[in-house]
Length: 439
Ligand code: IFM
Image 1: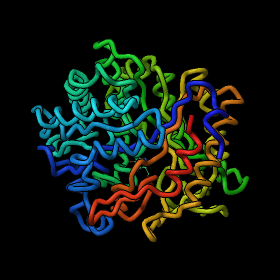
Image 2: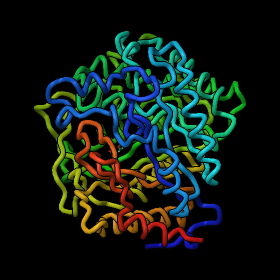
Image 3: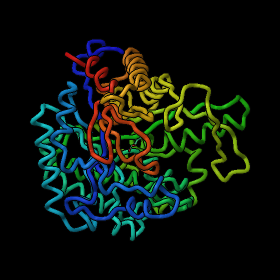
């Protein structure tokens, strides 16, 4: 595995988590979210598991942060939950604010830089009842939450991202139906695709009004590759790329949406959406990039728009069935530099793999994960050599946790969690990563 010294001076290494996936949402007065109700519906989540207890990080955050510090990490990417801060989407929960206050101090006490994400998917149920991301007013409700949490902890954040993975928030959740609220509706999806970016714009405005620096967004990217060079497969790949890889970054940096995606969403967009594009594309200080895999795209003429299918690739796969393809990370970073962000600071805010890890004699042997990390570090360094202003890498995830529709079955952590006892066992990859980033 490459070493810290191979990377530019000041390059940050850390790990990432998200509130609902680790905290234990039943503690501390958090309100119900659309994930609680989605998980309670038939067939949505493996074993109908939810985030009620998760990793019990709400009570164990001090020892979890010790594990980050002991690994020699520089930074911690975490998220704050809207529904913990404002359980009904409006009223403030002082207990929730106090938790994030304590957490922030505990991060700083360990010499870690706090990288906050404001929305990693906890839509309060009361706002979901009003249409959630399809409601034209949701961006302003989000802005109110941004004000409240920023007034409490914003003074101590190193960096603030408005949203995590708007593609998942909008498309995966409102068009493909795999995440809460589980819709398969092009009209709802079109509205969510825009309103989530409007929330980014309003969030940026609220942060800037408070003088916040180091503000940006976290987007997910896949490396889309046509299964063959037929015009139909190439056109399907372009549509997939437009929806997945270009919609959000193009809105955030240029104030436009790609034509290939507007083909389908255009007739269903909210009225006067164009009026929001200037606020959406206001300058950011960084881009967070989440990257896991490539997708091999086929044309699916009989499926509804965007007429896209996918086939399994030949390379090694993770427990999620995702192909391990580090070159795609390098190429996505080069595409972002040339087409959208230029020299803007970029962080890899998520990259990692799930494996069916087990504890044997008190240890977890996971060479697949160490080699996944090693391959992606190489790809990052190639991007740096090609001029990408890459400034840090966060492994996803610190802990095994609630993997949304897959419940607790998929283990992404550097640290194994026994969900019966809450015992933490650092995996071999944790020690390999620690050795690589040692000073
Ligand atoms: O667990 C998720 C995370 O919440 C968002 N990015 C992808 C991860 C792995 O699926």
